[in-house]
Amino acid sequence: DAKTTQPPSMDCAEGRAANLPCNHSTISGNEYVYWYRQIHSQGPQYIIHGLKNNETNEMASLIITEDRKSSTLILPHATLRDTAVYYCIVRVRDAGNNRKLIWGLGTSLAVNP
Amino acid sequence: NAGVTQTPKFQVLKTGQSMTLQCAQDMNHNSMYWYRQDPGMGLRLIYYSASEGTTDKGEVPNGYNVSRLNKREFSLRLESAAPSQTSVYFCASSDSYYGYTFGSGTRLTVV
Image (cartoon, rainbow over all chains, first blue to last red; front, side):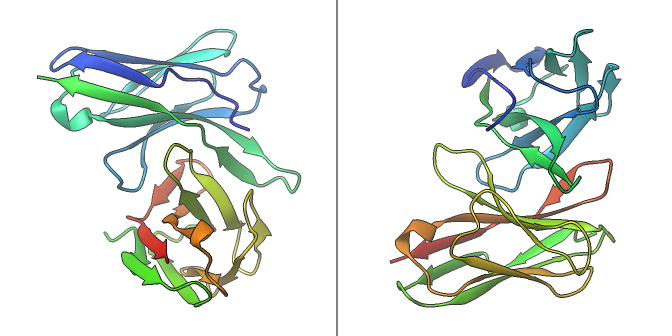
């Protein structure tokens, strides 16, 4: 089962910041949070990931709460091309110590003109 | 920079037919994965290969087999296709840190 909870859908005005929340209250101390997005039916695209500290790259910022039970993905200036399904995922280790991503249903973000 | 290449992109099979989905990556990643995605559901892991020479079952392995041919290639085989296997199939590869790189998918319909 997915270890994350996300709202099923959100709207955002073009040019404004999009803030996508994610709850992961059962996350363990060594488990990373990853964000991906999927545009139309293309393959998912990596956005950003983090463990404890806030992270920023050319695509987005990731804010992780101090207790690590939730996080927020921020797209600073959303464009129409950012319309996609955004997945918040916890990377876990299985019984064989292999890293795996457990996918939920994500948040469908609609960026409106 | 091709990344992860999947073939074919589309396929229609009759029930009982067999086929192999091909996947190749050029990023020298150790780990490779096969997922399926159905409407209203998240990606579900079918099989994965943590390194060359190893394969392991994921969440939904029944009806599928895999082969890690070498470090670059990871194939998924349907021996006797069933309508329940109609889905979009994604192959992915990863290194240990930066997450997964996905292919563009194979849209399979079993009639």
